[in-house]
Image (tube, rainbow, N blue to C red; front, side):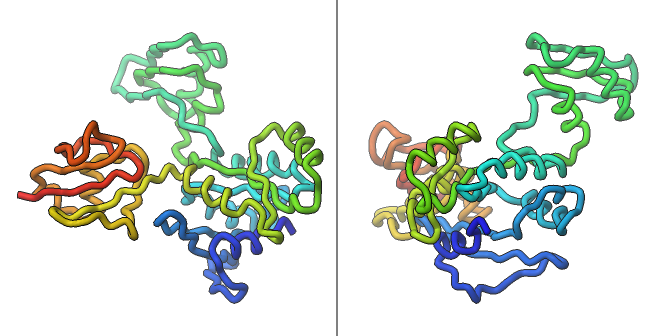
Length: 294
């Protein structure tokens, strides 16, 4: 056991008698992590074994749950760190791309004219003729293709398949209380992957892991302030980094944007406190926001 259940309890303060949700014959144990005002649902999935993507050990059902996740935690036993590659391979085999982004290209189908490829970068991993051949295999015989980054044939197939999921990950190395720092350094050298070293049993680095999860999800906190009132620092509004005032309005109520006059912001995203801004102003972590309606 890599200690996933113990870790879930540490992150969420869940008890061993936590309710289980059934996904057909697959049991997924949920918990809620509260950190910096955010409530983050964490699902403890049964362990992944080699061949899971082919259906071994109900693996496809286990892996498919990860399709809807915003973040995947890859939990490794300190004595079996090589399982990191196995987990990513099994996820990849069912179309889940870990720590990848869709390639930057546009495929515009046309009614005639064959396939034209406009490569805006030098293609080293794939040729224009290969691009055309792959499109034809997928039944596309007339199209304009704009390629803005060098890509592989596999990446092009991912785009054409239209069933790939791209998800971020954090690698977590558990049971570090059983080894010394030298051993951990050797693990780092062997797997060539950054990880968060923890011990769920000994409660080591649990807060650091919570912070890493929060940051990896790209969350920021916005403190709402009623007009002529005081900011609510106890319950921040949680949104994604780069969110605009409009996106915050939509989180509060979809009709607020229709009554929007202007907003006032205090914090890092403005030059001075109480600055008037419009709907398209981008907010930063711990900004204080007042929305003034018509």
